[in-house]
Length: 290
Image 1 (cartoon, rainbow, N blue to C red):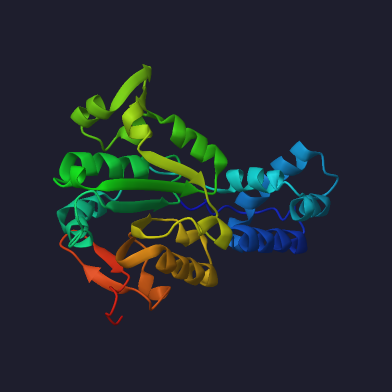
Image 2: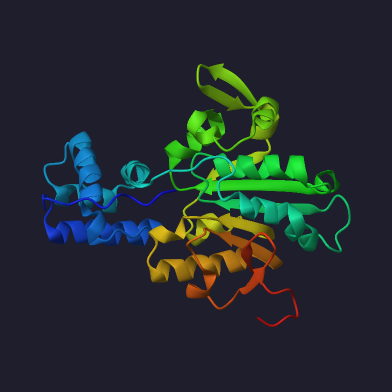
């Protein structure tokens, strides 16, 4: 994901209504939009006000607050999220995954036991598919364990694209040609689809990580990839997300954040771990102090 652009606003939406919208988005989704993002937000807000034929922004806000189905809030959220990603992005963390982290995670486990990895904020799916390819290509013990790969996002349109698994040259730019040949099939000029076996290996689901009911299914997770998502949250939202990840992880499990993010600014629950390839954050093992 990439941050929305900073653009000047003409102040078309009254400040009180703009702030009310931002407060509602923060409360429902954890997403935090500052004044610098006002033009970006206003353009998408205007699009949805027109589409719903609401007479005013205030009426549209009431629709968001009280619509029982939540369908309009989901449409707005889909517009507000920015899904800028590609295969093997921040590859050094994938290197870390197979060069030592996973061997530490499964130490003491018997063959056939479960290994759970969660891509939180998976956008259009490049990250979880990259994880799957990396495991298949580079982790010698991949066949020893029952690997469960979960991927979640708040954007239903992005999830539909992820499940479809069709990507263009921009998404595949960092993939070696032999991996494209092995794991993709051409479907049209300039686009390729992930092979069925790989698509079926990832469990995609709609999850709002600030909603405890939606994240409750994620338990016993060994590795969480949450990269470039929490930059959209305010400080309280980041702390709450960190606490949620802590509860979801098994003792000794790891969190991988984006290169500009640091768990030390969010939570004291995790132990920073410096591997040769990357710095990750670990939930202390049972009986260990943080």
